[in-house]
Structures are given as C-alpha cells and as structure tokens.
Amino acid sequence: MTSQSGGALRLESFVQSNTLVLRPVGELSAATYEMLRDGLLKCAADEPAAIVVDLESMHATTRSLLTVFPTVLDRISNWPGVTLVLAAARQPLRALLDSSAVSRFVSTYRSVPEALEGLAAAPRRRRRQVHLPYDPASARQARQLVKQTCDEWEIPEMANDAVVVASELIDNMVQHARSEGRLRLELRRNMLTVAVTDQDARPPQLRVPGLRAAGGRGLVLVDKLSRNWGTAPQHGGGKVVWAVLAVSSRTRASSAMRGRPSSSTGRYLSTA
Image (cartoon, rainbow, N blue to C red; front, side, top):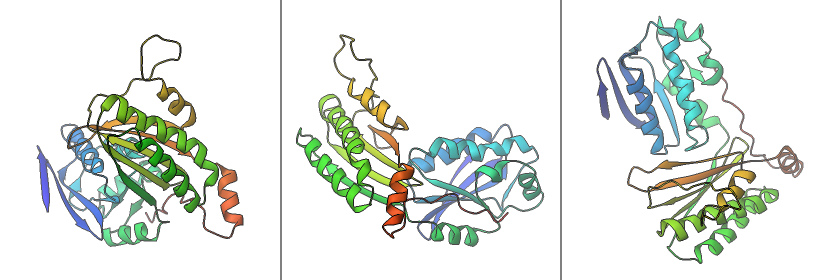
C-alpha cells in the first residue's frame, strides 16, 4: 500500500482484482480539494484498468466539494479513458452524496467488493499496443495494424479514419519528436481511441493550412476526423497525443445484426 498526504487528507492506494483502489483518509475541505483532485488525476495517468474510490474513511460537510469526483471523471474520460467509481461511503457522507448530483455522473456502490463485481461484469474494453521504432516505415506498420484491428473488432467502417489519424500522429512522432514510441488502440463505450507516445515533451502545434510555417498541418486532419483530441505528458518523460473517434450507430447496428456483441457498454448501474 502507498499513500500521499495533503494536510488533513491522506490518499492511500492498493491494487485489488487488477483494479486500483484509492482510499482518501481524512476530511475533504477547501484546503484539501486540490490535493484529492490532483492525486486522482496522477493515479489515472498511470492507466490502471479502473479506479475504485473507497470513501469509508473520508468525511465532508460541504456538498459542493464532492464535485471533485465528476470533475476528475470528465478530465480522464477521453484520455487515459480510465473508469472511476465510488464505493463504501458512510453516513453522513452517504446522505451528502445522495442529496447531490454526483451519482448521476459517477457510479456509486455500497461496498468495494460490490464495485469490483460491477466493474468485472461490465463489457470488456479492447486494447492493443505496439512499439514503433524511430523509422519512417513505422507509419506503414501502423496502418496495417489499424486495418487489421478494426476488422477483428468488427468496426471495419472505422478503419479509413483511424488509419489517417494514426498516420498523422506517427508522422509527428518521427518527423518532429524524432523518437521511437508506442501506438495504442482502444475500443470502449462506443469510442475508438488512437494514441501515440513519443519522447519529446513539446506538445504538437495545430496549424491552419496555408500558413508558411512548416509542420503541424497533419493535426488539422486529426481535428476534423476525431470527436476530440489532445496531448498529455508522460511520467517517464515525453508525451502522448491521442484522438477519440466515435463509433457510428450504423456500425454498432451492423455488428449487432451479425449476431455478435457491439462495442456499446453504457454506464454501470448505480446501486446507491
């Protein structure tokens, strides 16, 4: 178990059933709000499969401070795409949660074991990751992998857009970051994420076509094809550039007609 402290609040962490369990110990107040928010964000950046926040040892008296949980969930929903749920709140914190809108956005369970069961029962997220050398040929390798993966995940209609996005991100890795990296593909909640890491911490620049400055124009295509995109620093140095593509309802319907489960996961049911 590890812990980090911030005034009257301490954040303990341990892994259970391949899920990161975080336990805030102490009082959530205006003075400790940022510590809890930043601690949750830092843990999510390590890309665990999911995070359960065990509220058994936390207390709070101000309902508005509980917005820290939907705020964090919103920040991590696109990248790194980590599921966050709450569990084991005791009275009077449970009453405070019930009277707030938090459970409308963040799934809430009565106990940590119940939360783990709910996560285990949720539709499986699909993920594929490959190392890419610092080589112009990496883009060709990635295009082949993206096409193959979209076929295997039964979303072939997504292949063209995903290939373009992956190519542009990898070109940025080779031409501008001048480093090796990783390509990650992930399918979850009707969203396909394409992400590329490199060893250059400088964020890519989105440039408008027609400007004389060289480079960066490929991100215009990424911006146009994706639902959302962004960049984030990596703990070990460098950055990740990610883009989220929405899986169309027609694609999901086509998958269902083939008699196989679609990529839809929906929200976990709250048992609050």
